[in-house]
Length: 88
Image (cartoon, rainbow, N blue to C red; front, side):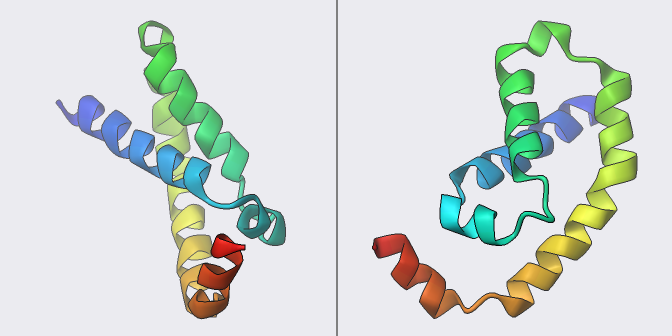
């Protein structure tokens, strides 16, 4: 059950990264947006080939730095400007 929960929330992170605008991801290349989306696609479509060691390594090694990057972006982003760019 724990592994299933980890995979589920990893899917959510990947889907959120996938849904971000190209302008936003291009302006923040320090975050590996496409890697997150790719992992999500692999977990969804290649679920029968999921390597639990790789998933666990990503959680242990990449989740905390991602949290720090996203926290910083949440503070620094001008959300009114972002919304305007999203409409354009």
